Image (cartoon, rainbow, N blue to C red; front, side, top):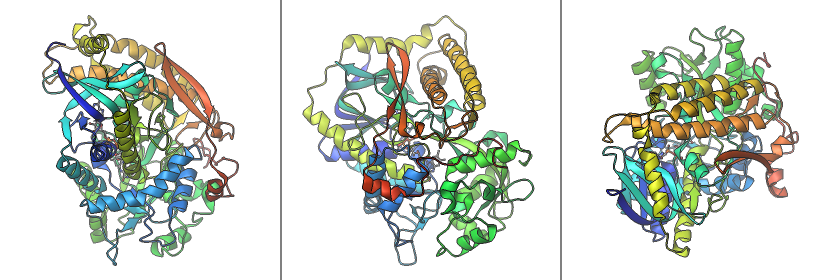
Length: 611
Ligand SMILES: Cc1cc2nc3c(=O)[nH]c(=O)nc-3n(C[C@H](O)[C@H](O)[C@H](O)COP(=O)(O)OP(=O)(O)OC[C@H]3O[C@@H](n4cnc5c(N)ncnc54)[C@H](O)[C@@H]3O)c2cc1C
């Protein structure tokens, strides 16, 4: 406590991905004294890894595109569990946010006429993703980062925040530690924006990096905020499966958007067997039709290889379970036989290098071996659609850490646009709140208790190893809370998570506070375990299959569940779960979603169910 570093800001943004940077830029522009805090180096957030593009109805490639169609696609892709207002704001504002990025210096790929080029992605009716080859996230982060730094926003990097500080139920700051020195640091703030991303590191096979340990979700839960729909986790259909060291690494959907097709070990284009009725009208039924679509974009139908991610991931899972998988438990993704080498290298340079360097596979000549990988969480912190305020005053959330926008399944490209649209809104609301609110008061006793908890792993008497506990958690979530779930497996997962919580409490770290990754993981473990419990309990409660949540024992969507959010909150130290009705969209928006939706239902192929 004595050597704790202290700072005061109007707005503290935790996280420097697209959502955090965009929020900070807006808060700062509105006159709020703003800080960005991030646990890795600036520029190293997940956003930088984004490959395929930013979804926005710019109508540069298809003049028929507009926000209404984007809204419809997002709602249908999300299996109607979305917060309709967020989906509406997102579709309406995404084009302006992309053009703003361009004004700030982002260089996108171009059409022949010099407009921003847009590519096809799963579940989008029209080619809609503004992109820079397969390195879109890099360009987005570069642009936002330059803009933020040039605006004079203070940045605290390699600094992990661990607890939110509260005063009378309002969030007034946060406390954490510098990763290099281990010194404690506390921020007093008029308002805090959480933009810490997801929780992929709770699973064994994931496209996510070390930073995704669910910190923001856990901090919000501890401060009393509501979470919604934590069971909605996205398994991206195409991650690398071989060699084992890179298992889970993402293979962009852009490969399929640019002509790649999926095949099983018998060489069959199996996706034609898995087209749900809900999407049949938009999807080619035969290989010939799909190929025509690829070659002639005027034929406005898409290949089933580009169905929404949940559909494709389940189909791959079924093929592998039915014995039609590859040697390493995946399926084939082939672009080499469909596109010339120079096209592949130009459109997918990162994929070319990724496979060449990590798997010794030349994707211009050979097929890729791929399988599902935990990629994204649609659930997260509940926010107000217009302001991004959480259910706790003074606390805002944007980006992957927040929920509602994507419903039961996120469409590719809709995350980067979500970060820009709702990051900006969160920053503006936080600045406004900080201006209006009373001066924040830090409770010294609470600060002291949090400081003790941060130091606690050094004082424990147990002998558990944090890496062993983390590894056991990843196995549990992978085996029991994966693509296909059942009651008995989820119950077993809960038992194991509780055991792991007890083991985590016995983790003792040695050495000093100077860069001590074992200590950092010991602290992250509490977040990973807390969020894993929320995911598992929510998955147990939702007795239906919808989007990213497939229950083998309830293989169909249930219209009653389709109208409910699963809400998780912490009261008296215990996780409480309830269901609450989702507000219904006004009639004019209902009409946009389409008449062909069977009362919120979608056809879901459970494991092996659609041979
Ligand atoms: C490989 C890959 C490719 C993708 N491609 C696309 C794509 O093409 N299009 C698309 O729309 N989406 C894509 N996504 C998804 C998208 O990139 C992410 O959902 C999005 O970038 C999340 O942004 P964010 O701002 O919410 O979080 P992030 O970009 O992950 O940023 C989180 C920030 O929070 C910080 N942080 C976390 N915990 C703490 C803490 N305790 N204290 C301080 N700081 C903390 C981190 O250091 C980081 O700065 C992809 C994801 C991956 C992994």
